[in-house]
Image 1 (cartoon, rainbow over the protein chains, first blue to last red):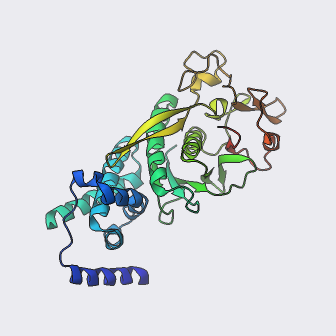
Image 2: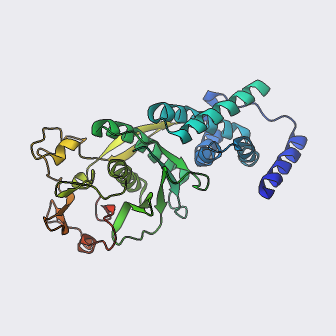
Amino acid sequence: MFRRLVTLLALAGAAGCAGRAPPPAHAGGCTEGAVHRGALGLLGDVAVALVGADYDAQLAALAAKSGEPAVTCAVQEMTDEATKKADRTSDPIEASRAAHGRAWLAARKGGA
Amino acid sequence: VRGSIAVVNWSDGRIDDAALAFASAACDDQLAECARAWGLDPWPVTFVSSTDSLPLATTHVMAVVDTIDVAGAAGYHNAANGVIYGKVLVRSVSQTGMTLSHECVEMLVDPDAQAWRGLVALEACDPVEPDGYPYPTTILGETRRIQLSNYVLPSWFDPAGKPPFDRLGKLSAPLTSSPGGYQIVRDEQGNTSTVFASRDIPAGLAAKRAIPFSRVSRRLAGAR
């Protein structure tokens, strides 16, 4: 809880300095350079973040550390894959990842 | 049996997370295909950075590690106190992918590594252990070719089975092995032994003929 609180405080501070978060990277940007490499390296973290109910805070922490475009790309990829896996296997963890990922992406799209 | 496999990188940076994300995605596709061939429920395979928040009753951890606690093994899976898990020794990216594939397939087919078909252990990859095939896997628009393990089909365990007997169609008869492959067998008294297809047994494998705890499904380190 304490660590989460610190993370949220850090994010609040960062947002205050940097203004609005950059818009999410569109699909094409996910294949390019640093964003691509960053997103690849985040897939494991995003897979963990999307399982729990506190996914929004966890993804915000990742975005603060690694940049929103890379996180958005990783979430998009993980959501697409989790949706396929959930449809194929009825696995509840993959279903959670898919639902949380869709909700997070929708909120970003709506707020951009 | 329903379940899922979470692949986690517990090596000390000897293989990067992205490589394991690709290998895990390839194994996910392979398990979907393998489950159809075996008439099993498919298990998803996902790379994760941590297992802390995962329900371990249904999520089976496959850890990629620097050192392994079964002598001479490149990987194994097992069950302890009802928890099914596996370990893969990190080696080259290609070798690690092969072992990951081997253990994921065998975990799907026999989760706790205890089942037998007649006098032969239900190990889906051991008889064809050296045989692999490249599988193109795309993540975020990037495609890598991941080396996956061949595996035998249910017909292989049936002495009267009809081909194909394995994923790659290399075997021409049931209960046979590829050169370098092996089978764990037992006699009528229940004594187990490992039968190698070739006399060219890699050094040190004799030690692996007797595992002091339950039968672990393992990929031998001597294999390519």
